[in-house]
Image (cartoon, rainbow, N blue to C red; front, side, top):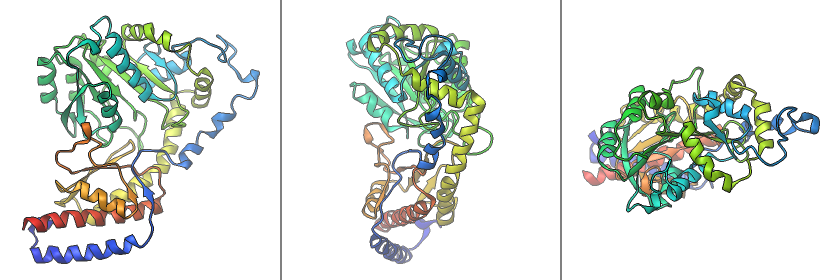
Length: 426
């Protein structure tokens, strides 16, 4: 239905109908949370076998240093190699750390601020530091950067990734721009995969700052929802080919492969960048949790093992995505003028857009009805969505019955908010 074409009388009748549905929802004491991309219990159960893989000294690796002791700041070589294969780099280009890639991103920003990058002026000694933030994007990237006093610049996106004409113009002329955040595969929240052209242009573009870095958070590199995968061009190879081997910092983790709270994260980059990082990391830690790293290596084994468990994850969460997408299609259709949404092939989110100026109202209506969604604006720097239109949906943690109810609330709230706005414009 194209609501804007309807008469005011028609819209008022539709609004009355939706408000009656909403009043019925309010009586049901609903409590559903689809605000964050958390694995559900069934997904966590897939990795429980890992916890019983070390029961005695005989289960420990027979070669190399004792993993129970200090040392090994770069992480276990076998896991470095596995992450390297996953990300398309050599194992020697990977540092494996603790459970949180976000922690490794924070530490990387902190090092840049305090010590600079490969001998450059520490960023906290500069008058101003800026970061480019393709949006809608991952809220924690934006808040992490802002806490250091770095200025955030919103970059528009399309189905190929960040709008590169804008990116190239900015980095070419402004030395204070030191980085760009990227979730290149099944991006949070849009689900897009950066095109080959975008990856190439990021790798080769001239930058005014010699210490400009791409923060490449490849969080969903193996998180396909369907058979096969959408290919992503290798950013490190592209940077090397264009004479910029130090340009990219790559991050990933097993947070949504094994256990989010007890996984393993990694930082990958050029050997020069890793050497620079290790100079200060050696004062931060005497070594990571190598027992947990070994458990992950023993459980996952290799990329075939990773792909096997990810197919099991997909089988659990794919029906949840299908539930939401089918309801939205049934309720609004492809050409609705009040709602549109992404149709991701992987990752953890659906990006849902409503009529400009209505997202906050939809959020409040959902909240009052017992449905928690991501705070409107969080997918943009400083929590400010100028269009007041984007809503992030995270289907994975709830069950399909809850999602049916969640969809009913979301659809009803959308119609009420948007129809009210259209009536006010008549």
